[in-house]
Length: 460
Image (cartoon, rainbow, N blue to C red; front, side, top):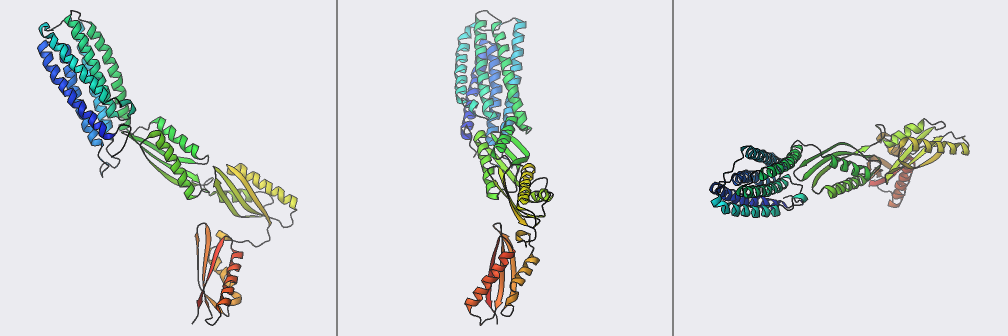
């Protein structure tokens, strides 16, 4: 069962007590109106009858909204609350129009059918009705703290009943003492107010039923996303409201340099801030890595740097994300004969171009090196090339070992190479271990950021 600013169980109790109270008012006013001949009391009894029916509908809709999601209502049953609020609003509008028509009729008819002998009965019942109305207003006293349209409809019903009772009381009093028009004008003012409040509630309920996104909520979600990280972007933001609950969906475009853990923490932070502002909300963010101009940030950096004059090659581009900024390190190759001062200018130009075109760059570190050195391939090496490097590393030990299998994979952002070797079974373990270590070191010199393990097995 969901929680809200007004507990769901308490809301059901509110409506149940309200139905019982207003039903007693209808019975009492119907009898008193017929006995005293008061049109005002009879009109108020009809108001009470319709309000009994509308409160009953609200009660039924509230009970339905408390049911958990099922296969037919996967988002739950909160829409029943909006439906109940709409129905209650329409009933109030109809009642207000009816009371207005009665008021105009009284003014035009200029007649009174009050039975003065039973006027005391009328005043007593109106006093009882006023007490019941005040009780119902007290029952729904948390309506403004609640976002539930059902509770607000019940609150408006209670207020309208109290206002109607006052109109009936003054109208009956004026009629008893021979003044025929005061109650009619007061009734018209009250009905105008009721029509305004009811129309506003009906419009809000229609907006919820049509899944219109509340603009203030959409803007708040956008602000929370933008505040979380300056490089964070979003797509397909969707917001819908059902009862007191908000459903929020969006695709978060995080920098591809951001780790999965950091992206998850960022998403959780946004969810927490949104829920703090909204209360109850069902939020689902789909995280997608985002590069620059449709390619990864590393590839984008390689492309723009390769066009710089004096650059012969680029490798080992690394982009790290921290605090809404990117930190870039890369190796840039220049002609071996280039003077150090000129190489430094090339490096400065590389830093400038990356900072201008990559965006949100906090720092760029360029490692300048001559283009004639042999590169350590790292992630760029494929499996066939790795096997060739392994075989070359073991070439000088062919007389005492044989490569059985080479397994390579990437885990925890690092290349792993496992080499299974079959050694001469009579070879001392100390020598076998020394040879395995030499092979591991040769492979690591050729391939950067690599964990190499040579497994020793004895031959037949």
